[in-house]
Length: 246
Image (tube, rainbow, N blue to C red):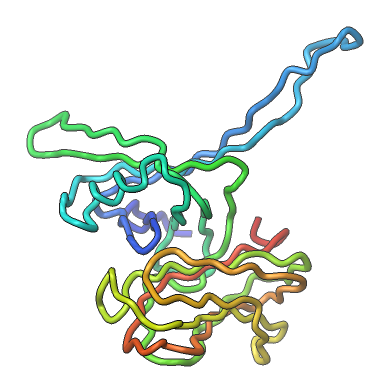
């Protein structure tokens, strides 16, 4: 595989995309351990504890206005509920996506170390909540009902999973609204006949999700069943299939 540039990576926070052109990104996994050494132990004994996943962004300060970097990171400081994803290769589907379904911004350092450059960092974190999925669609404009292009996970899952959708804009507006727009994730065993696995119904931009249960077949796609009165919707979609992608 050819080397990838850092600008191919991106972090998505709810409806907002913080691209690698002005930001760096890092994913961290940590595991606590507990000392369970007792009188019968022949040496030190430890057991694994809670896992923590962090998605760290380090980007240039590009706006104090509403929906600017400073405003969005500040609003989520210590507030759980942000749907945060790290996409290492944003232009290629069926590649890994690391997601924290309900994250909080754990720190907000501001650095002005050199003249003319100010950076603001976000450290998104959650305990026992990190997941690894596969990208179905990135920053894609949907202009009507119909089916998207499928991806092949290589094998089916038998224990469900999760469908995640970031709605970036509705009718060209990051704060746009619709009326019960509906986008489904569908799976197929032969890439021909598809069945619904989960549906996200929304009327505003942001991070949305749906649970999948039972068998999830190897081919997956998104399908828009209702535009909700909108003429265009821009989305990123990915799936987490238990025991297949994670």
